Length: 377
Image (cartoon, helix red, strand yellow):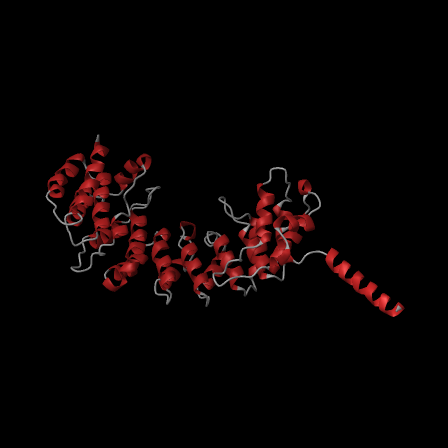
């Protein structure tokens, strides 16, 4: 009997200890996680904040190279949004996080170092040290996103970006295509060639990102491969992306700083295309790709952009507007382009052609035309 009582007592003690112990990560709420890692929210130490962020090691990285929904980031957001909370300085914890064995922690941490003002030199050096031997695609993906504008000013980061373009993961390559195509990387040797290579990637989304962002490098070498794609009817899905880059090279809203006549010419040539039986060429969102202007900078830009010809734009857009075989979204978009770039006389002259339309989408075009008549008052 004594032995039985002893065994029962021991069992109760074990059960009690297990019940009173800390919850497992997956059983906790964000508030409970904060309570278990931080003593005083008004004065959080670096060690406590490192401990909190390090719990990301419990979180799964999904196939999209994202952290699955988790209580750690929720807890961090709660602390960040609380005006009474005092977080430690980034310089006190970021390098320690970069040394973590968990890719979830390293990847999340590198995403913290970027801002509207770029990456400070100390964090950049710490990130470079971490990335020298980095193999995890989640970390590389986040690092490309965070450091993508630094390739032009730092040789090692530039090399990192160019190497990441050869990554076996399409999501990483797409991130490179997006980030490498940045005006900050105009001076990065190899950026243009790499962006052109990504235009031929086996993954469609990588190609689209390369076509969309190549124009930001402001190098006319990207025009020829874009035009080659625009001349291929089978690649119509990429046409808006390519035109977007060309327009950035000759129109460059909202800055109106770039003045590539070759890019302008290629844009107009494309917009003149019409393929019978294919209403999506020219693509509607390509037609609408320069339908806004920065009034404060437009006049100075126009003085330099001697190729810019509103009369030609009016002719090109009118041909699209009156063609019933072209997508109605392209036709209404062309009306808007006319309202932006043409004179009142040119726009009013369009009225007779618009009023004479009788196809099944004519009402959309007429309504768009009427809507913009007041723009010239």
